[in-house]
Every structure is written in C-alpha cells, then in structure tokens.
Image (cartoon, rainbow, N blue to C red; front, side):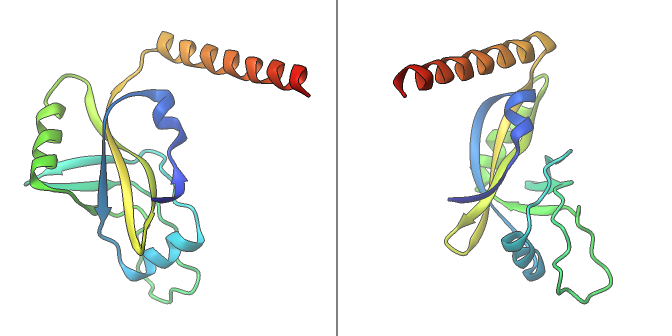
Amino acid sequence: MNIIALNKKASFNYDILEEFVAGIKLEGREIKSLRGQKPSFAGSFVIISGGHAHLCELNIPRYKHDGTPEYNPKRKRLLLLKKAEIARMEGKMSGEGITVVPLSIGFERQWAKVRVALVRGKKKFDKRHSIKEKDEKRRAQQAMKKFSG
C-alpha cells in the first residue's frame, strides 16, 4: 500500500491491539483531493452501527477544482470490511476502554485503503515511557553515527 498520510498521534496515545485494512467509500472529488493533498486525522474515529463501520471526522480537504457549493470535509465515510471483521471489532469494542482509530490512509493500485486498529488508551506514565525509549534510540543512533563516520 502506498501510504499518503499517517496518524502519528495514534501510536503515542494508544496501545495498538489489532490492525485491519479496509477499503473506504469516497466520492470522485475526494479521491482527487487525496491524491493532491494530505488528510487530517485529528479527532477521527470509527463507529460500528447496523453491521457497518463508518469513519468519522477524517478531514479530507476540498478539491481545488471542485465547483460544487456544498461539501462537508468531515462527513461519515463507509468502511468496506468483511462481516466477520466487523463482528470481531464489535465484540472487542464491548471490552472496557477499547476503540477503533485510523492509523494511515493510502492507495493500493487505484483504490483508497485505510489501516484501522483496535486500540486501548495509554496512561500518562506509559506515554512518558514511550518518550524515554524514543530518546534512548535516538541517542544510540547518534552515537553509532558518530563512531562509524
């Protein structure tokens, strides 16, 4: 999958339990907009109702050559998943503190795909631990670079 945008906050704010790749039902102008501009994942989430999964609050900006007056960049978009995957997500979401968030969006051949994940929120001390690990990795890489070059 050719990734065009990542939800960088997802791995920092959540523990990722399980990932799924889903198609996304978009309009033609949204596909054109995705090819030219980056969507924003801020506040986006997935809801499951009536046996269907919907991606909410994903901001796909207006296509610059679109002449239609009415366009909602944060509308609900249908996710194309198998019934078994939706049932699995729904069953896991009934657990305490588990939700579904988008991780990335990209193209697989000509189709837009979204990688979504079942996640559990991290506590403040978990986030501090993640920052500490990231800093240690960065320092180790800098030291390796310094001594090898």
